[in-house]
Image (cartoon, rainbow, N blue to C red; front, side, top):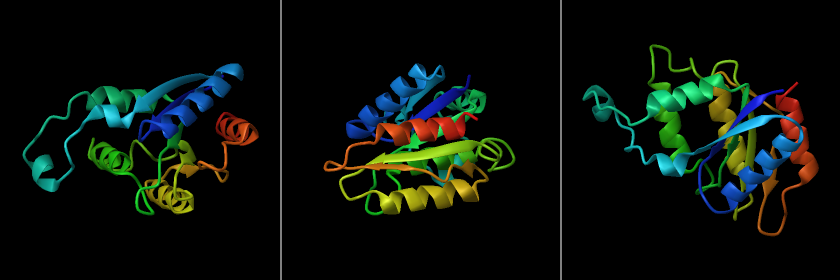
Amino acid sequence: MAHLVLIVASDGMNMKLANKFAQTADELGHTTDLLDLAALDWPLYSNAKVNSGIEIENIADIVARLDAADAWIVIAPEYNGSLPPTLNNTIAWLSKQGGNFRALFTGRKVGLATHSGGGGNRLILAMLSQFNYLGADVLGRSLISTDSKAANPETIKAIIGGLCQ
């Protein structure tokens, strides 16, 4: 069976959605590792910080956890029609590890999901664009849920199935 990292870019409803993915993956015989980006509390990325040689707490551990996964599911809210700051900041720091900014992402199977107050379509397109640019193999099917549209359990299963084949 497969090992999935659930990358969660906020607490609240997206964390609840991540727990649904984890429960479903477990029922299907897969293992999961939940990565809570809000709990990382990394400094805001900037070239000045990179050039100063700043050490980011636990980044080597995070890279190892991500690298050990068969696939990732990124679960994030839509912020102003795009990525939330926690996700964008984490991607920026991760892309600076090693000599090739795409190394961690290239060929990585990635699924996308959101619970958003504003619909989530723009976020899914923004994540699709960014992860494609970084070389990831993004699953064509994504999940969008809102306060008035619950997460479809069949879509959760389909995303997990698509990433674990």
